[in-house]
Picture 1: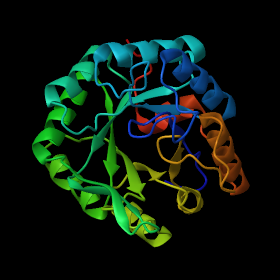
Picture 2: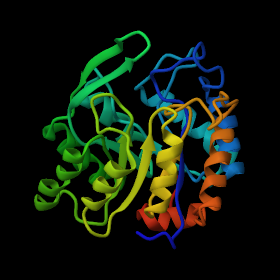
Picture 3: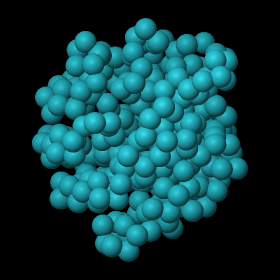
Picture 4: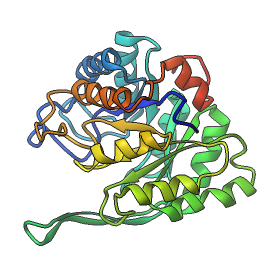
Length: 291
């Protein structure tokens, strides 16, 4: 990857942990997802990472909810966004998490690349806001990759630490991964790699040759990390799943505001935002629409 190449700007449109009491702009209904998708496209985003919700905001792993959200988005913006599904969950079976992948065949789907402590710490309160284990054993990673290969879905390898990047090697050796990879570094989660530019560079140095990589910054440190990622030749993700706030501390009124600021930073640093056609080419995703 090179600073001369275009940067893919992705939006994590809703997430599953936060709610409207924390940020009123989080979409719940398919229509609200579609309205956010329009704002994302209008401001330069080319991929949307989807956690499904029921219309009351409850997180969902049901095929019908992913389908309703995806259909609403595609009716609004057509093929102007690459559809990327989340697969991460606590207490949800592999059967359920692979069912919607097989049924809907998104262009891209996330694969979390390792187990970890997953927490949020409050320095003000001197305590953990939440504290859990996020299990992602190799057996589940293998199953996801096998399903994605069968269904023509491009994996997005989400790495929360440098060891997760190293976990790609045995999967390549097994033949489960054979083409250029799409790797994202998730930084800012307590229990994962500390969110510094030096650590970002270290993770980028460890991706397999020929891979495309990007940054997922969690919390307001995201904006500094975005600058570092762009300077290193990477792509970037913003959105209400990852961070509610603009660089000045103002809460974003929409995903579109976050995408607009990310696009501005990209251009100010001399990078060019990728078009959706360029993003599909860079990631090696199939051209047809989601079923």
